[in-house]
Amino acid sequence: MSLLVVGLSHRSAPVSVLERASLSADAQIKLLQDTVAAEPATEAAVLATCNRIELYADVDKFHAGVAELSTLLAQHSGVGLDELTPYLYVHYEDRAVHHLFSVACGLDSMVVGEGQILGQIKDSLARAQELHSAGRLLNDLFQQALRVGKRAHSETGIDRAGQSLVTFGLEQLALGGDVQDWARGKKALVIGAGSMSSLAAATLARAGVAEIVVANRTADRAERLAEILNEGSACGGGVVARAVPMDAVSDELTRADAVVSCTGATGLVLTAEAVATAVSGRVGADGPGAGGQEAGAPVRAGGVPLLRGPETASGGTAARGAAEPEDGCPLDLPAMQATAGFSVLGEAAVAGMAASDLEQHAAWVDNAPRPQTSTRAGAVTTLDPAEEADAIAALAAAAAAVGRIPERRRPEPVAEIPRPRPVLFLLDLAMPRDIDAGAHRLAGVRLVDIESLADASADAPMAADVDQVRRIVADEVAAFGAAQRAAHITPTVVALRAMAADVVANEIARLDGRLPELDDKQRGEITQAVRRVVDKLLHAPTVRVKQLAAEPGGAGYADALRTLFDLDPETVAAVSRAEDSTEKNGKNRGPA
Image (cartoon, rainbow, N blue to C red):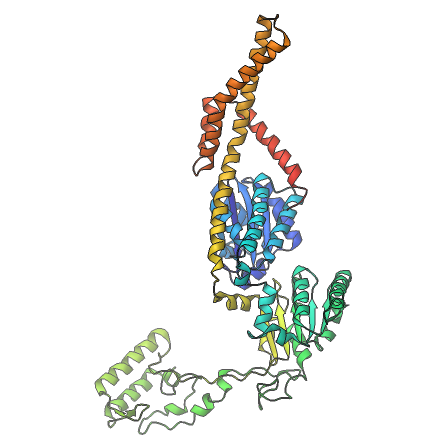
């Protein structure tokens, strides 16, 4: 076994890189074809999801394989190799098996324990089988990964450690509150009709939304999804679903309370301007914190207010600019430009000062009457002139070195920025993204996308069941490796037994020539006796060599067996080819 995986995921690369490196269905097919056509690889499979892109291959050379697979990923993703390389990870042999099994169990997912990855692994195997790029190794590997994932979900509580990306995203929209309370009575727009969008629609229906509108480029798929949702509603649900064409999204957006988008589009489906138009007029009626906006808040085109930055928040620059100047100081420090979060007498006040101004201030410090400052509690603090002069000299040196004055005082707290209550909730599960990230700056809009989900899930607590799943993965990796190593020696054992059978047949034929008077019963008894002798002589060595070959480092036993019995390498290779052909015909009928 020479299994190699090269890939990148949400754990190794920022979302911006994953977004650019995403592979379309056609690109995945071409990548598989080019991989098996490359010299180091004999098998290949691609696992591409919204937060990972991995290329699996059976290679005969490690370093050449890494170089070739990395180059192919760069070529087909459209991201330059130099830019992509820092984010790539490489796993080989048992580590590669461990990685895929962990992925199948949801241990490597953005939301730990989610089960949707099993369907994606199944699709990946089916694609490789259809293109005949999966041979014995990858068929065995992916089939076993599916079984390991199912075992983890059935034998442990890994489902409690996390949930689907859709559910996690809806929880983030609800700000950690109860999703059903948040969803009740809302009108939802689902853009896309693939597996993720269908899961989102079903989850929203169960959560209690009043209406779901499905928009998709292929009208039949949108209508089918809406029909399924309505059938579910007839069995006790309360949601009403309907399908619309993609060109109706703008109109539906103005009526929607929540939007979930997951398409395969390469460009934006919803721009910030479209979202701004959709919420225009829906913000500003209820006052701050309740869906409205603050008086005097800046307004963008279309009447949608933008959130204010720290420099305009209450308690910011304007409030501190009115501070009293320092008595006797030749510089009007409080009147200088300040920045939210810093004392006017600290970094913001003296940033950009010329050296001569600093020296002038230092001279005032030296000659100023004492005491000159007070603590927050009102106690007087006497500053030593020499120490203060040295400190200001150090400030001047720092300014010359780094172009800024470091803050010497504790920063003042920054006032919280009032944000209107959201009136439109956006969940973008696509990679590359469907919704303009700039929409999150619009007042009355809450946007959750893959990037924010990654940030939110980074601190999610790990359930105790995760440790149990890790033990399952470790056991299954050891078993898979042993099975593969044992299978590696099987053609040699088969060739040895075939050679022994030929020896028996030849000797019986010679016996017939020497003793033609033997009847059939006698000849049969002799033949059986010779075969039993050969079988008993070969039984212990062949059983033991399979056991030894299954252990780590046991690959050399096949070579030793071929050398000891002078087996023809071509005979062994023919057995191996015959087994591969039989397994391919059986397994390419579809994944389990």
